[in-house]
Length: 178
Image 1 (spheres, rainbow, N blue to C red):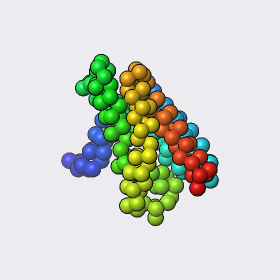
Image 2 (cartoon, helix red, strand yellow):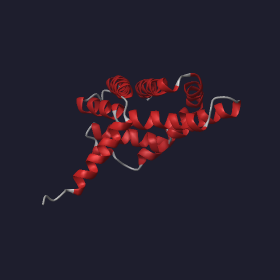
Image 3 (spheres, rainbow, N blue to C red):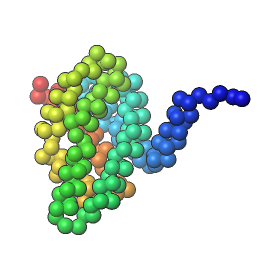
Image 4 (tube, one colour):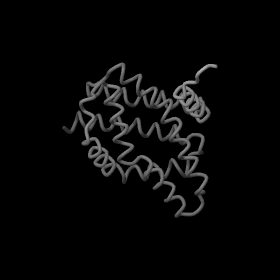
């Protein structure tokens, strides 16, 4: 008899599930848009690295290309865009997804891709909160349009473009205002 490695079989199962959740279009758009936005931001702040670029490409083309479109579909499933309160709630739910913990995780992954492991500190949570609070009024308006005016199939791309523009904005702010 042949012994089965449980770890390998579980990893294979998780891999199959992940691939079944991933669409090629979302993967391509996520990889390209996140890599462009982050690379422009990294160049503006003199932090460009090939490892960071590859990491952002993989992140945008896999994890983000799975979790964000599926969350948007969940919003669509439970709230139609008829009625004022449903439209507002859709925007608020989208904003809630990109919460301070999500922002801190995003920054932590950038630090990992850049080899800045010593910078993985609890202060990333504070950066996430500050960033979330500062951008929330503007982001809620953008999320309102994304969730209520853009068809579900294109919402991930629209959200990724918004994220890329915000990355460039934060980089420009760091360069121009600090």
